[in-house]
Image (cartoon, rainbow, N blue to C red):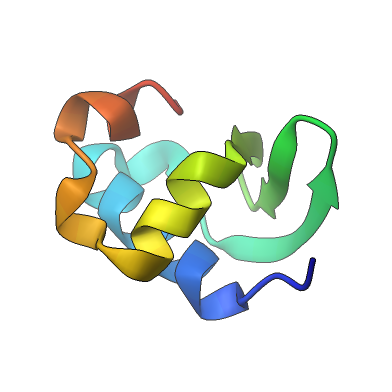
Length: 70
C-alpha cells in the first residue's frame, strides 16, 4: 500500500487544531499497527481504517476519534 502523504497532512492539520503540541510532519511509513507518523514532537500511529476514512469521507471522523490518537 502506498501512502498518500496529503491524507496524513490533512489529519495532522486536524490534530493540530485540537492540540498544537502534535508537531509538524517529518515522515511516515506503513506498519502492522497502521501508519506510523513521525512529527517534530514524536510519533503517532494512525489506524489504517481512520486513514482510509480521511481519504474517502473526512466528515465521518469525529473529534473523539481524533483525540484518541493523541
